[in-house]
Structure formats: structure tokens, C-alpha cells
Length: 176
Image 1 (cartoon, rainbow, N blue to C red):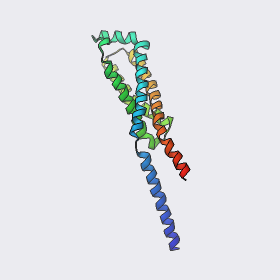
Image 2 (image 1 turned 30 degrees about the vertical axis):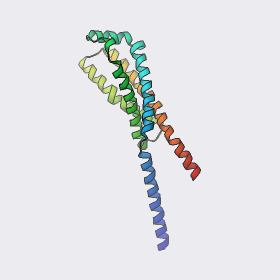
Image 3 (image 1 turned 180 degrees about the vertical axis):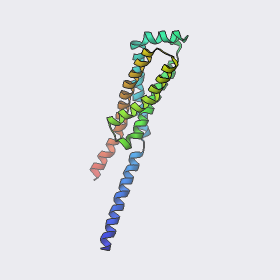
């Protein structure tokens, strides 16, 4: 009975250690994939913002800027381009960070995108509405646009991040 107990204990310890090792591996962020996915997400955000601010709401946006004595042509477009790429990288970072808890896939990407939208778009829009900085319609359209934009950008960025796991899983399947 003593030997069986020791074997059982050893098997249990091995199983726990294997589980801990898998948790540790899953908890590591692949920063190269975050950067690649974030750049793709940032590109989506940049293209989307260009369409919003020129085609969809261009005239209203320019009118609102002129009403506040701001030259819409003089706005630092370079800053907004960099901002969009950073936003994409942040969105994919959030996806990578919550992935061990929520699991890989589109649901987790949508949760990450929604969280980034709340923290960057919703709160700032509430503040701008509260201060009366821009017309409500302009802010409302921008807010809804940003939600769709961030969800799509995060989905694409997370898809790139997800691909980093495929080779490891395949090699584990052939090794076992």
C-alpha cells in the first residue's frame, strides 16, 4: 500500500506541475505578434478614421473646428496617425493579456476591443459632451463609428496574434 500511495502522489504532483507549466506558457505574451497585430489594427483604425473624417463627417467636422477657431487643415495629422497605431497596439495587448482568462478567439477579441473603446472613446466623449466642446450629433456618430472600428480592428489584430500559437500546438500533437 505504501508504494501505491507514493506512485499516486508522484502522479498527482506531475499532473499539477504540468498544469502549472501550461498555465505559465499560456500567460506569456508574444510581443512580436502583439506588434504585428497592433500595426494591422492601427492600419484599420487609420483607414476608418480617414473615411469618417473626410467622407462621412468631413463637412460637419470642418465646420465644428472653424467654429472653435481651429484650422481643420492645420491639425497635426501625423499625431493622429501615430495615435491610431498605438491604439491598435494597445487593443491587441489587452487581447493578449486577457486571453489566458477568457480563452483565445473572437469573443475575447471583442471583449478587448470593447474595453479599449470604453476607456478611450466612451469616457472622452462623455467629457466632451459635458463641456459642450462639439455638437452632439458629431460626437454620437464618432462614438458609434469608433465602437465598430475598434471591434473590427481588434478582431483582425487578435487573428494575427492567434496565429502564433498554431505551430506550437501542431508540434505538440506530433510529439505526443
